[in-house]
Length: 299
Image 1: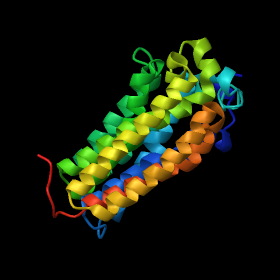
Image 2 (image 1 turned 120 degrees about the horizontal axis):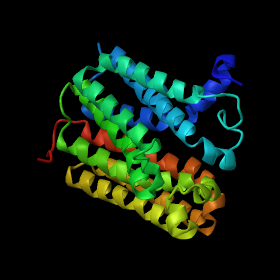
Image 3 (image 1 turned 60 degrees about the vertical axis):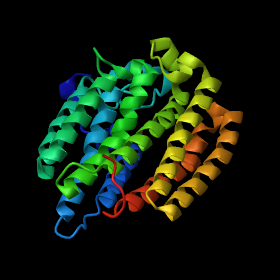
Image 4 (image 1 turned 90 degrees about the vertical axis):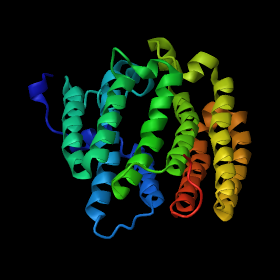
C-alpha cells in the first residue's frame, strides 16, 4: 500500500502515541507546579498547556519516533503494533512523528522562554533516543538516563520554572534530579518485555547486557537509593512528616521488590502497577515538602 493510499485510522494513530505513557511526565509536571509554591490563579492556561505538552504532545511524539525507528524490533516483540501490523502503512509513522514535533514546538510558545527551551530539549532527547546516528537506546545506560530525564526531571523542572517564571531553586533541582535517577531503574524494568527482539536486533538494553536477574537487582537499587537520599534531604530541611511518608512508601516498595526479584520478567508489569505507583506518589509528597519558601535552599 502506498503512502497516498492511507485511510486515516484514528484508533491506530492514538495507539501509536501510547496514551498510557503520558501519565508519568504529566504527573512530574504537576509536581513541578506544586513545588513552585506559586498559586494557579490566572495561570490555568499555562498549566493546561504544560500538561498538554508533557503528555499528548512531547511524550506522544517520543512514542511515535520510537515506534518508527523500532519497527523492525517491534515486528519481533510486538507485531500487533500499528506500524509493523500495517495499520499505519508506508512512512506515515515518520510523518506523524515530524508533525507532532512541530505541533509541540508551536504549543510550547505559550509557556514562555523556560517552557519553550525545555520543550526543545525534550524533543531533542526524544529524537536522539530512537533515531540514528545517536540512537541512545542502543545502550541501556544512556537510553534509560535520557528517558528518566524526559519522564521525571525535565517535566518537573519545567512545571516549577513556568509557574515561577524563573529558574527553580536548588531544592527543586535536587529532588527532580534524584527522581530522574530513580526512573532509570523503572526504564530497565520496562525493557524486560523485549529481551528477545532487542538481543536479535542489537539493542543493548540492560537486561540484554547484564542478564535479566542482574538487571532487575540493579533496577531495584537504582530506584531505592535516590528515595533514601530524598528522605534524608527532607529531614534536613525540616519536612519530617513528608520524609516519613516517603520512607513508608519506600518500605512497601522494598517488600514488593523481593517478589519482583523472584521472577523479574513475569513480575515486571505487576511491579510497574504497584511499586512504581508508590514511587510516583512519593514525588508528590516531596513536591509539597519543598513548595514553601521557608527553610534552607541549596546554593
